[in-house]
Image 1 (cartoon, rainbow, N blue to C red):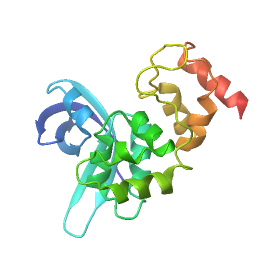
Image 2: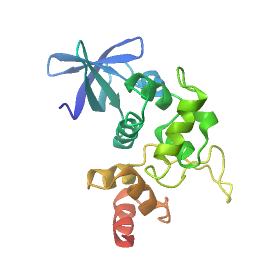
Image 3: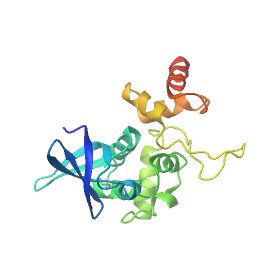
Length: 192
């Protein structure tokens, strides 16, 4: 299993980036947002999911561990393969997708290429209890501050410590976001 690739982006090819890792080029399929951010010649790290089929092998990559974990949850749903899961994660940042599942917003999920209304409903029904509570509100929260926990290093740190996506999200729910990553992780661990 290839857990991650860390190297330099060499080129971008139709939804995939080629990452040079020690002289070996790995083609990594990435969500649309991450494809847009990839810059040839710049360093990049992707947490990967190695998908093996009878006639092919593919790497799917995500800049955050939370994105990878959400991808792994999505492909557990009947009728959702890696390409559909990648299309769903291409809708927006991983936390926005996770929050839409948690709030049962099948309309948002069905906006993904190749994902119909029934599949979107199945995803929200099957995964709503596994992804934690909604933490992303596109726009503003009650105080008027923009809310977006995508790429949250504290969330990634808790998941690296063994928390699943739902537990990590719930542990950080009441932790102030203005603290450092280390302080937020300590506070989240104390709440558990």
